[in-house]
Length: 73
Image (cartoon, rainbow, N blue to C red; front, side):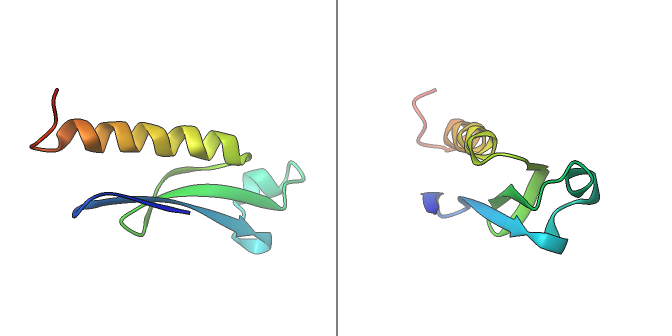
């Protein structure tokens, strides 16, 4: 799932499975988690639900849109 914001800001959600899941989530029985990527680099924490990751993605998109020179804000 990709959404291009501008030439400098692409926000994605990636899924991590198995050993890629942080130890604190694995200790709670989680075998999968989601992370937000900004321009291919992980930003923030790992989320235990896709909905949480989508909320974080929306926040990144809002911030990037607010910072754009042609923004109406």
